[in-house]
Image (cartoon, rainbow, N blue to C red; front, side):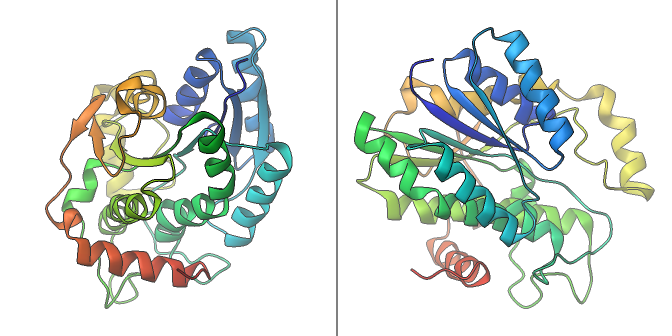
Length: 284
C-alpha cells in the first residue's frame, strides 16, 4: 500500500464493489461502506483474496438516515488521518413513497442528502490529504437520468404525487447541482469534485421496486453493461492523472461530458445548495 486512502459507499455489490476493487488494485487502502455487516465483510474478504496484501476496512451505515451518516463520518475520522478519495456511490430507486427517520422522502434522503452530509462531514480529512499530497478527490456517482429531472421546489418530496423515476431523476440532478456548487467553494483547496454517469449497469439497483418498473428492469437487465464496465468512469474520476486539478465537471464513458442545461444554471445550483444544507442542519 502507498498510503493513499479511499472510501466507497454502496460498496458491497455492483459498481461500488468494482470501484473498491479497482482502487485496492491501484494501491489504495479502501474503506467499504455497506448497509449490511455480513455483506460488507464478505465483500472486503473477496477484495483481499483478489488483491493479496490489500488493506480493506469495513464500515456499516444506512445512509438514508442522517444520524447514521454522522456516525459513519465519526468512525472514518477515527480510522483515518486523511482521505484521498471519497466515492459517493450508494443509491436506490423506490417504487413507493417512503419517509426516513428524519421525515424526508427516502430517494432524496439516500441518493442526494446522503452525498451532501457525508461529504461535508469528511471535508477535513480530504483537505488534510490535499495538504499532504497536493490533491484529494470527491467522486459523485450521478446518472444520465439527471437530464430528465427538475427540482420541484414546491413539492420536493412528492407529497402531492410521487413517481419513482421522477424522484430518482430529481435526486441524481441534485448530485450534479451539488457538485457544481461545491466545486466553487473548494477552489484553491486542492480538493476536486466531479459527478459522473456510470452507464446503464446490470446491478441490483431496482431490487426495491416491483410492479411495472420492476418488471421492465428485469426485461432490460440482460442487455445492460457489466458492473466492472460501469465502474470504469468512477475509477477514472478517482485516479486518472488527466483529472488532477480538474473540478466541477460531469463525466461519462471515462471522459469529460456535458450535463443538462438545467443543471448548469448557477442560480439553481445555489438554491439547491442552500436547501440541502438546511435539510442536513448545516450552515454556509
